[in-house]
Length: 163
Image 1 (cartoon, rainbow, N blue to C red):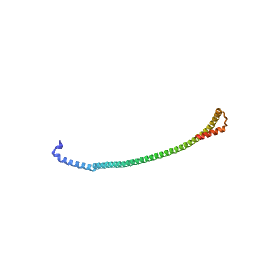
Image 2: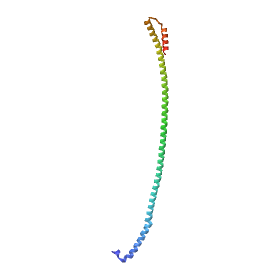
Image 3: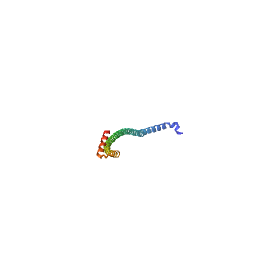
């Protein structure tokens, strides 16, 4: 093999050194700056993504806080509305109960008045009936003729005495 011939070592070393220097120069001038640029670009992209993620996280937290505040406000409004509706319903029920109570009181007073009137009529007719019965009893039992006015006066006096 010719590369292991000791007479060609010096020329091989010379060309190895030249190739190494040229390759080192090409890599250092073109490849390494390009790789450095790519690494810097990747680092910028990653940093931009991290910054964007942090900003989105902040926005999400703010949105969540706004949502929770809106929900709390909506709950408070619902509670207030329920209280108002309940209060209005109670007031309406109390008003309706008061109106019905007044109406029932008026109906009871009217019924008591009708009952008193019916009692008075019954008492008046009872006096008349009792006077007729007393007149008939006096004529049948004693054979006496009693006029209607005297019989009614006697029954009225007897009824007033029994009260």
